[in-house]
Image (cartoon, rainbow, N blue to C red):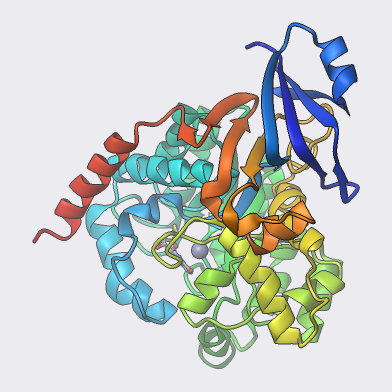
Length: 436
Ligand SMILES: CSC[C@H]1O[C@@H](n2cnc3c(O)ncnc32)[C@H](O)[C@@H]1O
Ligand SMILES: [Zn+2]
């Protein structure tokens, strides 16, 4: 792959909270090799391909810290329901009937195409058929942390927790050494996983050096059930007693937290994925994100699956997160634009243990880079590109995307996907899932 010099109007430096102008970013193979003044870049890399981005902000690719990619195929299948009714009465029966390697591969590819089109270059997934998730990511050159889900109840994928774990281990072995793909163990939630299984997950994560990804404190009902009916304690306390907080842990949702729980999460270095649209749509509640950030918790942003959002649009999520934090706290300075942008980039990277390779535009990191065209009516005038990226941009203004240096979106066109094929696949699945 040739050397590429990107020449943006604004270069967003997450690590220093600076906006550089008159600077270039140079990509060689899969890495960022220089960030320097334009004249120096042209002199030093005279033979490189130049990509002019005169109205664009250049920033690191966004990291979706919690999703179920393949659920694109269930987008709009069941709406306007509370979490447990949605899962028990609609989603789990549909998954039981239709989820297969083919479903997961097709749904994950659709999700990846949607995410790349909207500026997301990395996702932290959790679903069944882990091998199909990894294959879909590798086939399209997308960076993916594949969450190997573990539940107590049987599905066509596995009969019991033991079989989910065996399948996870086989998959982790199969894809060892793939640089774009990593794995977590993903016990689904405190209400769907037993103490014994959490114990096995903790031991394996420790032995294999894996992170853990789990839905925690998504709804008040989950907490009430654990406290009054199942365990006599709140789920987080149960998980802390079992030792789950001693492993690298990404807690998805964490909507309902007491002051003591926020202090515990901060002290134990638990990472939180905030999923504002899904929390609103399922009426799960309002997460105390400003308080969590103030306590020093590393909070990233996720979309959750397309069946509960119903978009995989991190720019929309970013805006929602910033607005909700202000409205909820009554403080307009809560979650300012730079901090929101950090959540969607470097904080997500940190949560995945990948902040040495992605999350900012620094020399030596992987070239996961996006360009956003701010010349559109909705982002004029442009006093401050960071303000626009958080409060005004539409995802269709993403014009270019590189993942590991590979151009994935050029002038708004996906390079590795045929949209017509993705649409045809989605329609084929719709006809199977809900025949008219
Ligand atoms: C075992 S793979 C993941 C499992 O989680 C289900 N799911 C999707 N969204 C949510 C959510 O917001 N909370 C809990 N569980 C969720 C998905 O349908 C899969 O069965
Ligand atoms: Zn989820």
